[in-house]
Image (cartoon, rainbow, N blue to C red):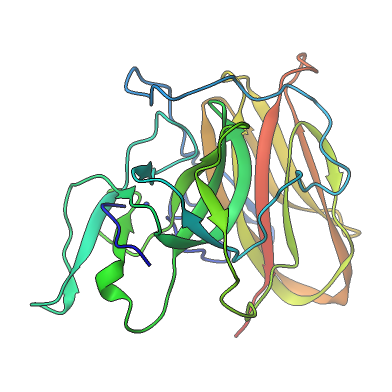
Length: 289
């Protein structure tokens, strides 16, 4: 693995997000503190065409070419940015390279840009914004790799080992490629999906007691998007958010589930603008104690 130049993410907490903590209401999680951003003049000059405004998500909720959860990716060209959110206007994550002398990660204010050959794992995505397909990724974990890894501070709190966002491609070129998986996922997601405006119903899954996960919502040209995630057949609302901004990132979860079969229903729409697109992605897991 090639050594990187410099590199963000939010490690998943089942019912909390480091980028805007949701509040628990009646057993469900409702996002109340959006982590929104507005475009700036410092956006990357490589931005290409805006994403499609197709208002119909794919039937399975998974766009063609979707990378699976925990898919190992490798950077194909030097300089891939790791950002704090899925947009070119988001700041770069701060880098913390390994210091062999102190045996620890040393925080810096240097923005993370990855060298060709750097590897990371898919955590969430894709969502489309600024002409790119974005994925949340995290560092590969494992002993003996510290010298090849730079930890990321994706929220500016001075704490590293976050996850971060990369642009995987722009519809013509790709900046990462999948490589052989690292092995089985200890707790695979019950649902790992992405889509656009419209309604998505997941495949049935078995769950019990407690489930949790994370989600991201991205708008097209700042169109105000209404986004809900509902657990069927109980009808319990896991997420209810209305976004005016570039993106919002949050947690979803619920406790006290009876053993049984469930599905997630996701709806996303821009009121009075049926052709405007919301882009979303989510991952739901069985909580393991």
